[in-house]
Length: 628
Image (cartoon, rainbow, N blue to C red; front, side):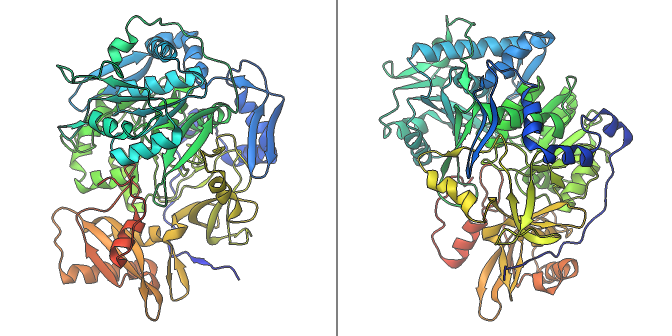
């Protein structure tokens, strides 16, 4: 008999979209659109692909040899042609593509025409170094425009970019360069964090010294006078591009040509090089950015991610540019120099779409309502959340302080999926804490370990049919790719547990590895954490299971308190009672520890396995993605 995952969450209020939101949305009737898309997914994806420009058409939409997929067979394309050339040849040529704001207040603005010219100069410089289709380039840059330019320039030539977040250590960077066998590294002298200049070049020097495939290192010098470079091996970015032609044709590529490797370990395991390709990834990121965020030409779209993570790849760089959007991207933390940082940017630039993380929302919650209240946020019309389940209290706060009338697109997806898979659309009624329903063309479900669908209740989140933006393999480790498809028969298994309610809404409950088994009951961490955060004293929480002599496991919680609240025995008892009231006695933590921080990946996900390993005196495994 399959193990059942208990669902203790009490379904919250329903928020209906207003008439104006529905009237202007691309999709006005989700149910009808979804039924049509799922009746013939290949026809649906074929229609989406035809909204983009291809050098030659495909003869087959999908070749599916379980679990290996190829999409748009015979078609040739280049994702950068659709991100740049398509717009430069239209009225959008002088439209703003990217607004960049540095931590120290610098501003740089690129129209589509200027971004196109800069990308072409970089592509020509790459060609001059002898880089050819299939070569790998490691990009280790802070969140500056050169990061976007380098990614697009690589893709334009059919080079494979491997962007590594610039907070990684030298050993972590070395392992990624080695696995990718990169010929070139692109970095900067410094990144900036909370007013401090963080040296990046020494990290690359240390890593590259142990990577024989690296031939050249390109350095963006932000500080003056510039750091000294090795004349034989290292080149200054500006000097490297100087004199390069602003014309460079996008190389026609087979739809299945690799676009990038992105190394992820997320909250579990050794880093793995997820492989995405030009054609299918282009189609998936284009249509999800368009429909989920209702992207229109007049919008200013602000995603707070870093292109070092998949959210930055898909929803700062590729998805928005494919739609001809105006993108705001900002270096720095949300609460530096003050907690008004993001609210100021939204007001200054008239941001209409704002995509952030539950972790950031909870951080800003800690500072209270006054900071957003000081700013005009009336231009906002669509909000988004990504990275982990958003607890209802954070959802409600985000909704309230931004005006109380903006729908929140609570998106669920992964590095491996390439694009958003479960999400509201602006026309859908919302339940705080739920990612609602599958995106068009996506056959998602909640099943038991045998793959049997669970009508309502808790189980494992799966995808039952291939989709265009899915990863094609794990670089150098195809067996690891097979593991995603062989865990539950006939399904892609995401590794997340999920509850499906009577309305078919999905409620993600945490990683399957994090499920706590208390007296035979399997309890998802997200629900207990959400209950704790709903207490007035708690801003953030993480839950693990600890061995227990009679119950099998007991729940231990780690909590961060809001400013003004102090740890006392009375408060700990009150927190336990609060969880019992919210979820029942079975979910009440036996132990609660107050902490000042939680171990997180640099993309904001809580690493519960690190907490558990420390608690039990075990080896935490790979922690290269740990923020601190």
